[in-house]
Image (cartoon, rainbow, N blue to C red):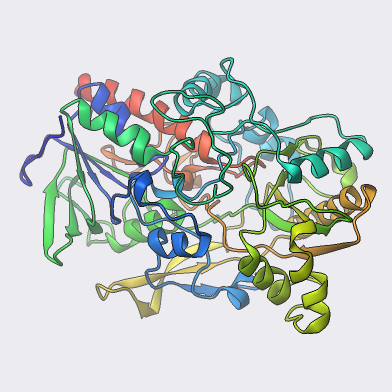
Length: 531
Protein backbone atom coordinates (compact mmCIF):
# COMPACT_ATOMS: atom_id res chain seq x y z
CA UNK A 1 0.00 0.00 0.00
CA UNK A 2 1.09 3.58 -0.69
CA UNK A 3 2.75 5.27 2.27
CA UNK A 4 2.71 8.87 3.43
CA UNK A 5 5.93 10.21 4.93
CA UNK A 6 6.37 13.19 7.22
CA UNK A 7 8.09 16.28 5.83
CA UNK A 8 10.61 16.07 8.67
CA UNK A 9 11.51 12.43 8.04
CA UNK A 10 15.19 12.78 7.13
CA UNK A 11 15.61 9.04 6.52
CA UNK A 12 13.87 9.08 3.13
CA UNK A 13 15.37 9.11 -0.33
CA UNK A 14 13.85 11.93 -2.38
CA UNK A 15 13.61 11.27 -6.11
CA UNK A 16 12.78 14.28 -8.29
CA UNK A 17 10.93 13.15 -11.41
CA UNK A 18 9.03 9.98 -12.28
CA UNK A 19 10.11 9.14 -15.83
CA UNK A 20 12.37 6.40 -17.20
CA UNK A 21 15.08 7.40 -14.75
CA UNK A 22 13.18 8.64 -11.68
CA UNK A 23 10.24 6.24 -11.89
CA UNK A 24 12.48 3.24 -12.41
CA UNK A 25 14.91 4.28 -9.67
CA UNK A 26 12.02 4.87 -7.25
CA UNK A 27 10.67 1.36 -7.80
CA UNK A 28 14.11 -0.25 -7.61
CA UNK A 29 14.80 1.42 -4.26
CA UNK A 30 11.34 0.72 -2.83
CA UNK A 31 11.62 -2.95 -3.79
CA UNK A 32 14.88 -3.10 -1.83
CA UNK A 33 13.32 -1.64 1.32
CA UNK A 34 14.43 1.99 0.89
CA UNK A 35 11.85 4.62 1.86
CA UNK A 36 11.21 6.86 -1.15
CA UNK A 37 9.38 10.14 -1.69
CA UNK A 38 8.99 10.87 -5.41
CA UNK A 39 8.23 14.48 -6.33
CA UNK A 40 6.60 14.96 -9.74
CA UNK A 41 5.80 18.42 -11.15
CA UNK A 42 2.94 17.14 -13.30
CA UNK A 43 -0.37 15.39 -12.78
CA UNK A 44 -1.02 11.66 -12.76
CA UNK A 45 -2.88 10.40 -15.83
CA UNK A 46 -4.14 6.88 -16.40
CA UNK A 47 -4.61 5.28 -19.83
CA UNK A 48 -8.31 6.16 -19.56
CA UNK A 49 -7.32 9.84 -19.43
CA UNK A 50 -5.16 9.81 -22.55
CA UNK A 51 -6.45 11.50 -25.69
CA UNK A 52 -6.10 9.91 -29.11
CA UNK A 53 -5.41 13.21 -30.81
CA UNK A 54 -1.77 14.22 -31.05
CA UNK A 55 -2.18 17.97 -30.55
CA UNK A 56 -4.72 17.67 -27.72
CA UNK A 57 -2.54 15.05 -26.05
CA UNK A 58 0.47 17.33 -26.35
CA UNK A 59 -1.40 20.15 -24.60
CA UNK A 60 -2.49 17.71 -21.89
CA UNK A 61 0.97 16.52 -20.80
CA UNK A 62 3.69 18.76 -22.28
CA UNK A 63 6.05 20.85 -20.16
CA UNK A 64 4.93 24.32 -21.23
CA UNK A 65 6.76 26.35 -18.56
CA UNK A 66 8.62 29.36 -19.91
CA UNK A 67 11.97 28.72 -21.64
CA UNK A 68 14.23 30.63 -23.99
CA UNK A 69 16.33 29.50 -26.93
CA UNK A 70 19.52 30.63 -28.61
CA UNK A 71 21.94 29.35 -31.22
CA UNK A 72 21.90 28.70 -34.96
CA UNK A 73 19.68 25.59 -34.87
CA UNK A 74 16.39 25.74 -36.76
CA UNK A 75 14.43 25.24 -33.53
CA UNK A 76 15.40 28.75 -32.38
CA UNK A 77 13.42 30.09 -35.34
CA UNK A 78 10.68 27.51 -35.82
CA UNK A 79 9.98 26.61 -32.16
CA UNK A 80 11.55 29.35 -29.98
CA UNK A 81 9.37 28.58 -26.94
CA UNK A 82 9.60 24.81 -27.31
CA UNK A 83 13.25 23.93 -27.76
CA UNK A 84 12.58 20.44 -26.58
CA UNK A 85 9.56 18.29 -25.99
CA UNK A 86 9.42 17.39 -22.29
CA UNK A 87 6.47 15.79 -20.55
CA UNK A 88 5.04 17.21 -17.32
CA UNK A 89 3.23 14.16 -15.99
CA UNK A 90 3.78 11.05 -13.92
CA UNK A 91 5.84 8.81 -16.17
CA UNK A 92 7.66 11.74 -17.74
CA UNK A 93 8.81 11.18 -21.28
CA UNK A 94 7.80 7.50 -21.11
CA UNK A 95 4.40 8.88 -22.09
CA UNK A 96 5.81 10.73 -25.09
CA UNK A 97 8.03 8.10 -26.64
CA UNK A 98 7.50 5.74 -29.55
CA UNK A 99 8.83 2.64 -27.80
CA UNK A 100 12.12 2.17 -29.71
CA UNK A 101 14.40 0.28 -27.29
CA UNK A 102 17.95 -0.12 -28.60
CA UNK A 103 21.18 -0.90 -26.81
CA UNK A 104 24.23 1.27 -27.31
CA UNK A 105 26.98 -0.43 -29.31
CA UNK A 106 30.41 -1.20 -27.89
CA UNK A 107 32.21 1.57 -29.77
CA UNK A 108 29.69 4.16 -28.57
CA UNK A 109 30.97 3.90 -24.99
CA UNK A 110 34.52 4.83 -26.04
CA UNK A 111 34.07 7.46 -28.72
CA UNK A 112 37.14 9.54 -27.80
CA UNK A 113 39.25 6.45 -28.38
CA UNK A 114 37.37 5.33 -31.51
CA UNK A 115 36.73 8.68 -33.24
CA UNK A 116 39.89 10.47 -32.19
CA UNK A 117 40.15 14.22 -31.80
CA UNK A 118 37.12 15.61 -33.65
CA UNK A 119 37.64 19.37 -33.93
CA UNK A 120 35.03 21.37 -32.04
CA UNK A 121 33.66 18.33 -30.21
CA UNK A 122 34.08 17.68 -26.49
CA UNK A 123 34.40 13.91 -26.77
CA UNK A 124 35.02 11.77 -23.70
CA UNK A 125 34.99 8.00 -23.18
CA UNK A 126 32.34 6.74 -20.78
CA UNK A 127 33.62 5.43 -17.42
CA UNK A 128 31.67 2.21 -18.15
CA UNK A 129 31.51 -0.09 -21.18
CA UNK A 130 29.03 -2.38 -22.92
CA UNK A 131 30.16 -5.49 -21.01
CA UNK A 132 29.41 -3.76 -17.70
CA UNK A 133 26.04 -2.57 -19.01
CA UNK A 134 24.87 -5.86 -20.54
CA UNK A 135 23.27 -7.37 -17.39
CA UNK A 136 21.40 -4.11 -16.79
CA UNK A 137 20.27 -3.97 -20.40
CA UNK A 138 18.93 -7.50 -19.89
CA UNK A 139 17.00 -6.38 -16.80
CA UNK A 140 15.67 -3.26 -18.52
CA UNK A 141 14.55 -5.21 -21.59
CA UNK A 142 12.73 -7.73 -19.40
CA UNK A 143 11.15 -4.97 -17.31
CA UNK A 144 9.95 -3.03 -20.36
CA UNK A 145 9.05 -6.14 -22.36
CA UNK A 146 11.15 -5.20 -25.38
CA UNK A 147 10.14 -7.12 -28.48
CA UNK A 148 12.69 -9.47 -30.05
CA UNK A 149 14.28 -10.00 -26.61
CA UNK A 150 13.55 -12.65 -23.96
CA UNK A 151 11.52 -14.65 -26.49
CA UNK A 152 9.02 -11.82 -27.05
CA UNK A 153 7.89 -11.72 -30.71
CA UNK A 154 8.22 -8.63 -32.88
CA UNK A 155 5.29 -6.41 -33.75
CA UNK A 156 3.56 -6.70 -37.14
CA UNK A 157 4.48 -4.11 -39.74
CA UNK A 158 1.97 -1.56 -41.01
CA UNK A 159 1.80 -0.31 -44.60
CA UNK A 160 4.37 2.39 -43.88
CA UNK A 161 6.77 -0.35 -42.79
CA UNK A 162 6.07 -2.41 -45.93
CA UNK A 163 7.05 0.52 -48.18
CA UNK A 164 10.08 1.13 -45.95
CA UNK A 165 11.09 -2.55 -45.98
CA UNK A 166 10.79 -2.95 -49.76
CA UNK A 167 12.89 0.17 -50.36
CA UNK A 168 15.51 -0.88 -47.83
CA UNK A 169 15.90 -4.29 -49.44
CA UNK A 170 16.25 -2.70 -52.89
CA UNK A 171 19.12 -0.61 -51.55
CA UNK A 172 20.79 -3.75 -50.17
CA UNK A 173 20.15 -3.16 -46.48
CA UNK A 174 20.06 -6.41 -44.50
CA UNK A 175 19.22 -5.56 -40.86
CA UNK A 176 15.62 -4.42 -41.39
CA UNK A 177 12.67 -5.37 -39.16
CA UNK A 178 9.89 -3.96 -36.99
CA UNK A 179 12.36 -3.13 -34.29
CA UNK A 180 12.98 -3.78 -30.65
CA UNK A 181 10.03 -1.97 -29.14
CA UNK A 182 8.77 -1.30 -25.62
CA UNK A 183 5.24 -2.05 -26.84
CA UNK A 184 3.60 -5.37 -26.04
CA UNK A 185 3.22 -7.66 -29.03
CA UNK A 186 1.32 -9.99 -26.69
CA UNK A 187 -0.31 -9.50 -23.25
CA UNK A 188 2.42 -9.21 -20.66
CA UNK A 189 3.02 -7.89 -17.15
CA UNK A 190 -0.63 -6.92 -16.72
CA UNK A 191 -0.59 -4.85 -19.93
CA UNK A 192 -2.55 -5.47 -23.10
CA UNK A 193 -1.10 -6.32 -26.50
CA UNK A 194 -0.88 -3.48 -29.01
CA UNK A 195 -4.23 -2.76 -30.66
CA UNK A 196 -2.65 -0.93 -33.63
CA UNK A 197 -4.55 2.27 -32.86
CA UNK A 198 -1.99 4.52 -34.54
CA UNK A 199 -1.50 6.94 -31.61
CA UNK A 200 1.88 5.93 -30.26
CA UNK A 201 3.64 9.18 -29.48
CA UNK A 202 1.56 10.19 -26.49
CA UNK A 203 0.04 8.12 -23.72
CA UNK A 204 -1.08 4.67 -24.89
CA UNK A 205 -4.77 4.13 -24.16
CA UNK A 206 -4.46 0.34 -24.33
CA UNK A 207 -1.49 0.32 -21.94
CA UNK A 208 0.51 -1.75 -24.41
CA UNK A 209 3.41 0.73 -24.42
CA UNK A 210 5.60 0.60 -21.30
CA UNK A 211 5.53 3.68 -19.13
CA UNK A 212 7.13 4.28 -15.76
CA UNK A 213 3.86 5.98 -14.80
CA UNK A 214 1.64 2.91 -14.95
CA UNK A 215 4.28 0.17 -14.76
CA UNK A 216 6.91 1.22 -12.19
CA UNK A 217 5.04 3.66 -9.91
CA UNK A 218 2.15 1.30 -8.95
CA UNK A 219 4.64 -1.46 -8.18
CA UNK A 220 6.60 0.91 -5.96
CA UNK A 221 3.40 1.91 -4.15
CA UNK A 222 2.59 -1.73 -3.44
CA UNK A 223 5.79 -2.11 -1.39
CA UNK A 224 4.63 0.28 1.33
CA UNK A 225 7.97 2.09 1.03
CA UNK A 226 6.94 4.72 -1.46
CA UNK A 227 4.99 7.96 -1.68
CA UNK A 228 4.22 9.83 -4.90
CA UNK A 229 3.49 13.55 -4.64
CA UNK A 230 2.15 15.07 -7.83
CA UNK A 231 2.07 18.74 -8.86
CA UNK A 232 5.12 19.16 -6.64
CA UNK A 233 7.41 21.53 -8.51
CA UNK A 234 10.91 21.46 -7.02
CA UNK A 235 12.66 24.83 -6.83
CA UNK A 236 15.72 24.11 -4.68
CA UNK A 237 17.88 21.39 -3.19
CA UNK A 238 19.29 22.38 0.20
CA UNK A 239 22.37 21.25 2.06
CA UNK A 240 23.75 21.27 5.62
CA UNK A 241 26.91 22.88 7.02
CA UNK A 242 29.02 19.89 6.03
CA UNK A 243 27.94 20.25 2.39
CA UNK A 244 25.71 17.18 2.19
CA UNK A 245 22.24 17.67 0.72
CA UNK A 246 19.57 17.52 3.38
CA UNK A 247 16.27 18.37 1.74
CA UNK A 248 14.22 19.57 -1.18
CA UNK A 249 12.03 22.69 -1.40
CA UNK A 250 9.00 22.44 -3.67
CA UNK A 251 5.79 24.28 -4.49
CA UNK A 252 2.71 22.12 -3.97
CA UNK A 253 -0.48 22.08 -6.01
CA UNK A 254 -1.96 24.85 -3.83
CA UNK A 255 1.01 27.15 -4.43
CA UNK A 256 2.53 26.66 -0.97
CA UNK A 257 6.22 26.06 -0.41
CA UNK A 258 7.11 22.83 1.37
CA UNK A 259 10.40 21.29 2.41
CA UNK A 260 10.96 17.55 2.48
CA UNK A 261 13.99 16.49 4.49
CA UNK A 262 16.10 13.75 2.94
CA UNK A 263 18.91 11.29 3.53
CA UNK A 264 19.76 11.28 -0.17
CA UNK A 265 18.46 13.17 -3.20
CA UNK A 266 18.31 11.79 -6.74
CA UNK A 267 17.48 14.25 -9.52
CA UNK A 268 15.74 12.89 -12.62
CA UNK A 269 14.16 15.91 -14.24
CA UNK A 270 15.51 15.62 -17.80
CA UNK A 271 18.56 17.24 -19.39
CA UNK A 272 17.07 20.73 -19.20
CA UNK A 273 15.38 20.88 -15.81
CA UNK A 274 17.99 18.84 -13.90
CA UNK A 275 20.94 21.16 -14.60
CA UNK A 276 18.65 24.16 -14.12
CA UNK A 277 17.75 22.90 -10.63
CA UNK A 278 21.40 22.25 -9.73
CA UNK A 279 22.35 25.74 -10.89
CA UNK A 280 19.44 27.36 -9.01
CA UNK A 281 20.49 25.55 -5.81
CA UNK A 282 23.64 27.64 -5.45
CA UNK A 283 24.77 28.89 -2.06
CA UNK A 284 27.79 30.49 -0.40
CA UNK A 285 29.34 27.01 -0.16
CA UNK A 286 28.40 26.16 -3.76
CA UNK A 287 28.37 29.55 -5.53
CA UNK A 288 28.22 27.99 -9.01
CA UNK A 289 25.48 25.51 -8.16
CA UNK A 290 25.45 22.01 -6.73
CA UNK A 291 27.91 19.43 -8.07
CA UNK A 292 29.53 22.04 -10.29
CA UNK A 293 33.14 22.29 -9.12
CA UNK A 294 34.12 21.19 -12.64
CA UNK A 295 32.01 23.90 -14.27
CA UNK A 296 30.38 21.14 -16.35
CA UNK A 297 26.77 21.40 -15.12
CA UNK A 298 24.61 22.35 -18.08
CA UNK A 299 27.34 21.83 -20.68
CA UNK A 300 27.46 19.27 -23.52
CA UNK A 301 23.73 19.35 -24.30
CA UNK A 302 22.92 16.79 -26.99
CA UNK A 303 19.66 16.03 -28.77
CA UNK A 304 20.70 13.59 -31.51
CA UNK A 305 21.15 14.27 -35.18
CA UNK A 306 17.61 14.11 -36.50
CA UNK A 307 15.65 14.87 -39.63
CA UNK A 308 12.60 13.55 -41.44
CA UNK A 309 11.95 12.42 -44.99
CA UNK A 310 8.49 11.84 -46.44
CA UNK A 311 7.70 10.21 -49.75
CA UNK A 312 4.50 10.45 -51.80
CA UNK A 313 3.88 6.98 -53.25
CA UNK A 314 1.88 6.01 -56.39
CA UNK A 315 -0.76 4.19 -54.32
CA UNK A 316 -2.40 4.46 -50.92
CA UNK A 317 -0.27 3.83 -47.83
CA UNK A 318 -2.27 5.24 -44.89
CA UNK A 319 0.91 5.63 -42.88
CA UNK A 320 -0.99 6.97 -39.89
CA UNK A 321 -2.46 3.52 -39.15
CA UNK A 322 -0.90 0.85 -36.95
CA UNK A 323 2.08 0.94 -34.60
CA UNK A 324 3.97 4.00 -35.69
CA UNK A 325 7.71 3.48 -35.18
CA UNK A 326 7.78 -0.30 -35.54
CA UNK A 327 10.26 -0.29 -38.41
CA UNK A 328 14.01 0.17 -38.43
CA UNK A 329 17.05 -0.03 -40.71
CA UNK A 330 20.11 -0.70 -38.55
CA UNK A 331 22.75 -1.02 -41.27
CA UNK A 332 23.94 2.60 -41.08
CA UNK A 333 24.38 2.63 -37.29
CA UNK A 334 28.05 1.68 -37.19
CA UNK A 335 31.09 3.94 -37.35
CA UNK A 336 32.54 4.26 -40.86
CA UNK A 337 34.90 7.16 -41.60
CA UNK A 338 34.51 6.67 -45.34
CA UNK A 339 31.03 8.24 -45.21
CA UNK A 340 32.57 11.57 -44.19
CA UNK A 341 31.44 11.69 -40.56
CA UNK A 342 31.98 9.98 -37.22
CA UNK A 343 29.32 7.77 -35.66
CA UNK A 344 26.19 6.33 -37.20
CA UNK A 345 22.43 6.68 -37.47
CA UNK A 346 19.20 4.68 -37.70
CA UNK A 347 16.29 4.95 -40.10
CA UNK A 348 12.96 4.50 -38.31
CA UNK A 349 9.41 4.54 -39.64
CA UNK A 350 7.46 7.63 -38.68
CA UNK A 351 3.89 8.84 -39.33
CA UNK A 352 2.63 12.29 -40.11
CA UNK A 353 0.91 12.76 -36.75
CA UNK A 354 -2.34 13.51 -38.55
CA UNK A 355 -3.14 15.66 -41.57
CA UNK A 356 -2.97 18.98 -39.73
CA UNK A 357 0.43 18.21 -38.24
CA UNK A 358 1.99 17.09 -41.48
CA UNK A 359 0.55 20.13 -43.24
CA UNK A 360 2.37 22.37 -40.80
CA UNK A 361 5.49 20.20 -40.75
CA UNK A 362 6.08 20.08 -44.48
CA UNK A 363 4.37 23.31 -45.46
CA UNK A 364 6.03 25.48 -42.87
CA UNK A 365 9.34 23.73 -42.25
CA UNK A 366 10.36 22.15 -45.54
CA UNK A 367 14.13 22.27 -46.02
CA UNK A 368 13.66 22.90 -49.72
CA UNK A 369 10.87 25.47 -49.58
CA UNK A 370 10.09 26.77 -46.07
CA UNK A 371 6.73 28.48 -45.87
CA UNK A 372 5.47 26.65 -48.98
CA UNK A 373 1.71 27.18 -49.04
CA UNK A 374 -0.96 27.57 -51.73
CA UNK A 375 -2.67 25.52 -54.41
CA UNK A 376 0.39 23.56 -55.52
CA UNK A 377 1.25 22.65 -51.96
CA UNK A 378 -2.35 21.56 -51.36
CA UNK A 379 -2.21 19.30 -54.39
CA UNK A 380 1.21 17.89 -53.54
CA UNK A 381 0.76 17.16 -49.86
CA UNK A 382 -2.69 17.58 -48.38
CA UNK A 383 -4.61 15.85 -51.16
CA UNK A 384 -2.02 13.05 -51.26
CA UNK A 385 -1.80 12.47 -47.52
CA UNK A 386 -3.15 8.92 -47.80
CA UNK A 387 -0.35 8.10 -50.28
CA UNK A 388 2.49 9.29 -48.08
CA UNK A 389 5.17 7.29 -46.27
CA UNK A 390 7.54 8.72 -43.70
CA UNK A 391 10.72 8.00 -41.79
CA UNK A 392 12.74 9.60 -39.03
CA UNK A 393 16.51 9.75 -39.06
CA UNK A 394 18.22 9.58 -35.67
CA UNK A 395 21.97 9.49 -35.13
CA UNK A 396 24.80 10.39 -32.81
CA UNK A 397 25.49 14.10 -32.44
CA UNK A 398 28.72 15.54 -31.14
CA UNK A 399 28.84 16.95 -27.61
CA UNK A 400 30.00 20.59 -27.47
CA UNK A 401 30.71 22.52 -24.31
CA UNK A 402 29.05 25.57 -25.90
CA UNK A 403 25.78 23.66 -26.33
CA UNK A 404 24.39 24.14 -22.89
CA UNK A 405 21.64 24.96 -20.45
CA UNK A 406 22.06 28.22 -18.55
CA UNK A 407 19.84 30.35 -16.34
CA UNK A 408 18.23 33.16 -18.30
CA UNK A 409 19.02 36.66 -17.10
CA UNK A 410 15.73 38.00 -18.46
CA UNK A 411 13.11 35.23 -18.64
CA UNK A 412 11.33 33.98 -15.50
CA UNK A 413 9.10 31.00 -14.81
CA UNK A 414 5.71 31.06 -13.06
CA UNK A 415 7.47 31.17 -9.68
CA UNK A 416 9.68 34.13 -10.56
CA UNK A 417 12.76 31.94 -10.91
CA UNK A 418 15.19 32.09 -13.86
CA UNK A 419 13.90 30.17 -16.85
CA UNK A 420 16.35 27.87 -18.62
CA UNK A 421 18.01 29.01 -21.80
CA UNK A 422 18.70 26.21 -24.26
CA UNK A 423 21.61 27.02 -26.58
CA UNK A 424 22.48 24.71 -29.46
CA UNK A 425 24.54 24.83 -32.65
CA UNK A 426 24.97 21.86 -34.95
CA UNK A 427 28.47 20.48 -35.15
CA UNK A 428 29.76 20.07 -38.75
CA UNK A 429 29.70 16.31 -38.14
CA UNK A 430 25.95 16.52 -37.41
CA UNK A 431 25.39 18.43 -40.65
CA UNK A 432 27.40 15.95 -42.72
CA UNK A 433 25.57 12.97 -41.21
CA UNK A 434 22.15 14.57 -41.75
CA UNK A 435 22.88 15.35 -45.41
CA UNK A 436 24.11 11.80 -46.03
CA UNK A 437 21.08 10.33 -44.25
CA UNK A 438 18.65 12.57 -46.16
CA UNK A 439 20.08 11.28 -49.45
CA UNK A 440 19.86 7.63 -48.37
CA UNK A 441 16.25 8.10 -47.23
CA UNK A 442 15.31 9.70 -50.55
CA UNK A 443 17.05 6.87 -52.41
CA UNK A 444 15.01 4.38 -50.40
CA UNK A 445 11.65 5.94 -51.32
CA UNK A 446 12.69 6.59 -54.92
CA UNK A 447 13.65 2.93 -55.30
CA UNK A 448 9.99 1.97 -54.79
CA UNK A 449 8.57 4.61 -57.11
CA UNK A 450 8.08 7.73 -54.98
CA UNK A 451 6.40 10.53 -56.91
CA UNK A 452 7.88 13.21 -54.64
CA UNK A 453 10.08 13.32 -51.53
CA UNK A 454 10.23 15.99 -48.83
CA UNK A 455 12.96 16.76 -46.32
CA UNK A 456 12.06 18.42 -43.03
CA UNK A 457 14.60 19.65 -40.47
CA UNK A 458 14.79 18.62 -36.82
CA UNK A 459 11.79 19.42 -34.68
CA UNK A 460 11.51 19.46 -30.88
CA UNK A 461 12.50 16.02 -29.68
CA UNK A 462 12.51 14.22 -26.37
CA UNK A 463 16.08 12.99 -26.83
CA UNK A 464 17.63 15.47 -24.44
CA UNK A 465 21.02 14.18 -23.33
CA UNK A 466 24.17 15.30 -21.56
CA UNK A 467 24.47 18.40 -19.31
CA UNK A 468 25.52 16.34 -16.24
CA UNK A 469 27.85 13.88 -17.90
CA UNK A 470 29.43 10.81 -16.31
CA UNK A 471 33.19 10.93 -16.08
CA UNK A 472 36.02 8.95 -14.56
CA UNK A 473 37.71 12.18 -13.43
CA UNK A 474 35.82 14.83 -11.49
CA UNK A 475 37.28 17.64 -13.60
CA UNK A 476 35.63 16.26 -16.75
CA UNK A 477 32.05 15.82 -15.60
CA UNK A 478 29.39 16.01 -12.92
CA UNK A 479 28.74 12.44 -11.71
CA UNK A 480 30.71 9.21 -11.47
CA UNK A 481 29.94 5.85 -13.09
CA UNK A 482 27.08 5.23 -10.61
CA UNK A 483 25.37 8.58 -11.19
CA UNK A 484 26.77 9.85 -7.89
CA UNK A 485 27.89 13.47 -7.70
CA UNK A 486 31.65 13.90 -7.73
CA UNK A 487 31.23 16.70 -5.17
CA UNK A 488 28.42 15.59 -2.84
CA UNK A 489 28.30 11.97 -1.73
CA UNK A 490 24.52 11.82 -1.12
CA UNK A 491 23.44 13.56 -4.34
CA UNK A 492 22.66 11.48 -7.44
CA UNK A 493 21.44 12.11 -10.99
CA UNK A 494 19.33 9.47 -12.74
CA UNK A 495 18.22 10.65 -16.17
CA UNK A 496 19.54 11.21 -19.69
CA UNK A 497 21.64 14.13 -18.53
CA UNK A 498 24.30 11.72 -17.19
CA UNK A 499 25.11 10.40 -20.67
CA UNK A 500 28.73 11.10 -21.54
CA UNK A 501 27.90 10.91 -25.23
CA UNK A 502 24.59 10.25 -26.95
CA UNK A 503 25.27 7.27 -29.25
CA UNK A 504 22.85 6.75 -32.15
CA UNK A 505 20.17 4.80 -30.31
CA UNK A 506 16.94 6.12 -28.84
CA UNK A 507 17.92 6.64 -25.18
CA UNK A 508 15.02 5.30 -23.06
CA UNK A 509 16.35 1.76 -22.71
CA UNK A 510 19.76 3.04 -21.61
CA UNK A 511 18.26 5.54 -19.15
CA UNK A 512 16.21 2.71 -17.64
CA UNK A 513 19.20 0.35 -17.47
CA UNK A 514 21.33 3.03 -15.80
CA UNK A 515 18.54 3.72 -13.27
CA UNK A 516 18.37 0.00 -12.37
CA UNK A 517 22.13 0.02 -11.94
CA UNK A 518 22.13 3.19 -9.81
CA UNK A 519 19.30 1.76 -7.69
CA UNK A 520 21.26 -1.42 -7.03
CA UNK A 521 24.37 0.55 -6.05
CA UNK A 522 22.50 3.10 -3.95
CA UNK A 523 20.55 0.51 -1.97
CA UNK A 524 23.78 -1.36 -1.26
CA UNK A 525 25.57 1.79 -0.11
CA UNK A 526 22.66 2.75 2.15
CA UNK A 527 22.63 -0.72 3.69
CA UNK A 528 26.36 -0.42 4.39
CA UNK A 529 25.73 3.04 5.85
CA UNK A 530 28.20 4.54 3.39
CA UNK A 531 25.89 7.47 2.68
